[in-house]
Length: 180
Image 1 (cartoon, rainbow, N blue to C red):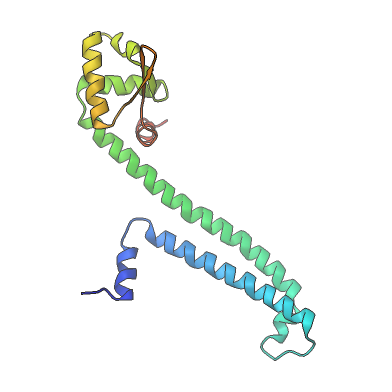
Image 2: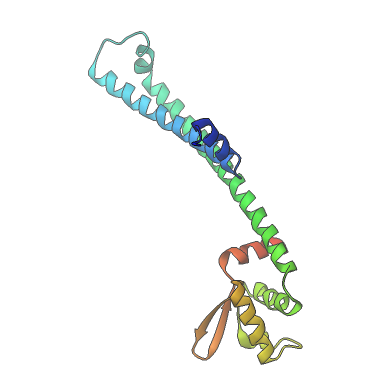
């Protein structure tokens, strides 16, 4: 059975952050409409001298309407910034929660590796990991290989050295988790 338009809109509104996005789209659409109406009224004022009673005040006071629309533009920009910042904050909170959940599923050695990488802004060399207390070269290699298979660590070969990197989203979430 095909969904009706109100059902589709209601389904869209139940998604995270979509209410803010819909409000943002409505505000921007209204602002664009006012700007187009202002341009149209200015265009009419330059071409004709007689106006209907509805369009007359808009055409006669188009400069004042330009100031009002400019002020409205600043308000729309501030509103858009606020709504987008709410969405960004929700995404950051979600990333923090996901990072916290990920850390709970890591072994002690894996947490130690991620902790060292986090202290070094998401990067480390495999030799630095092997130098940790209680960690041998073989053990470090096995831990890093497990982390790479899970997508937690990316390995880049630089000659004979393995450079480790945390993916950007994971690094951001872990930094949020640690309060950095």
